Length: 304
Image (cartoon, rainbow, N blue to C red; front, top):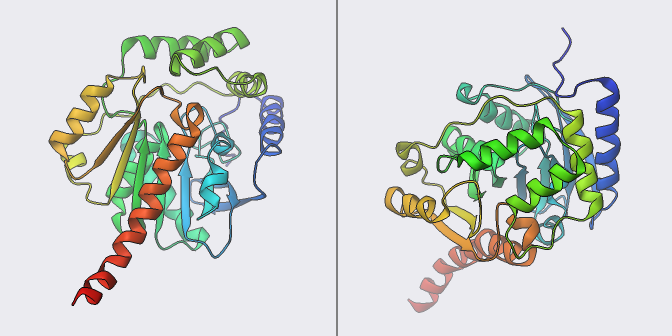
């Protein structure tokens, strides 16, 4: 049986892949690409960093792919072996399989990827919809996740109708003008905007892909409170997707053990808008806190 495709035609897929390769050639660090097999189809990924370094898995947002971590990968590979995945069914090079959000298959897919890569446990970062996937993976397979970072996670709050309408319009009419306008809307007023080559890639990708007609369900309070893995949630102060203050308040009320950091002067695209600030927050949580916790028993022993 032929695998489903997220692209409208073979020609559309070829254009999207050529644009993908062009972006990959801009990588600030040496990287390699590979495919791993899962029961949901082949999964493509970008790997970078020392092979012996601790593993870090990155999950991108909806309508994107692994090349979207270009502003962050250099900082992260300084300490980790990074595996940036192309989510199945999205606009990368993985299989076109699109599981229903309520099926639990995204978590099962990611668990299989871990197995194929020989990863027992890893730190995981998810951006937007990637945050939604990472969250449910951590709930389903908590022993796989050492630390979890959710960046502007989708479905933390009900999405604003304005965002839903603008996202739908841009997906339906993905021209350069509408795409640029939509990404200005997603970002903070302080962001200078994406470069032309990045906008061109989004236009090619979105014109090539089939629309997604399902929204991921909102996190339940019981699910959030049940997440006991060390977790950092990064939010942009000007994110237009939902009310950021209410989202942060909800987390504080339901799961005070989850660390929440709001980055001022950033919108939904905060890793791209303010990469230095975002990278510093990520490394502080993923590296420094781990180092301090591992050193603590030694300090106690010395005191005794």
